[in-house]
Image (cartoon, rainbow, N blue to C red):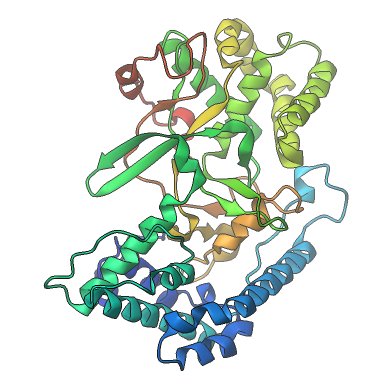
Length: 436
């Protein structure tokens, strides 16, 4: 996402910015901070001096991993210093920090761009000869896997065309390795876009930024209205956006960060909690039950603080209209009791230009967050979070399909819901956080 759409000059200089070749070349050229850490400069310079970067790539991977780990630890320590609070982690303010980048000088970023172009040229030359022996190494440079197995017809394709084909095939191969896609429920074809929606476990979601309690309550009421309009058999909502990122300390554990839609996620968690309680009983009892709810569902400390603030707002005198609405519609609230999955559009954070709001004020161009920031901000073992509605902003597809939480109401999972009725639900401007 940018302040504006790509300019005509951008398209002229970098080519088709709807493709991976154009977007990654643009990003590395325009945002030098997205290049490799400065510590990797000598290693990559040596690699580029070789005849084939694909052949020599496996030999430098251990060194580059060491540099990457050191850079991440450096950023984590600096963000610890940037935290606005030195108290224990009991309130939202205790987690707030300003994201920090690793050290990347201009020459290191130029080397990253050279590596991208050289690896593309190497794989294109192989494809032109009808072989792809370097595909595994190319995908590892691209952070991919073994899925690059498509048969590519090279007849009448130039080396430049083959570079673009290889870049796009690699990007799509990487995307298809995402474990969240195993629960794909719908692929929405809109123009040249293919938007894969999946049912994502509600309890697996990781929040990078806290919610605004009053807005969570507003979204919750809209969700109740949506469920009532569907006779309590479905709760259509605008799908959230999620991605996957490795955790900070455990290579085998992956996070599911919310890229867009933390208020919808918080409202879903709140409604499921309320659906399983003696309805709106004494506040002290509800607060204690909420702590137990978070523990049972392994929601983590940040969700606990976030939902506690929402519950406190619900019982506040200024929010009595929300309180009375929930009471009057308790039968609909009960329909949320068995919810396990929330619909989500699965995206790659690497393909987003995620803007850091805190550092972009007054700058000639937006300051971007790195993909690794999503690891630091979403891992509940780390004391980091972004402020409410002031931390980050992302792109959002213009087209979407309304999908339901599941299982929902008395209908068995996947059965008894009229999908056309969901898709045709009346959309208000702010429905389910759409106007965020």
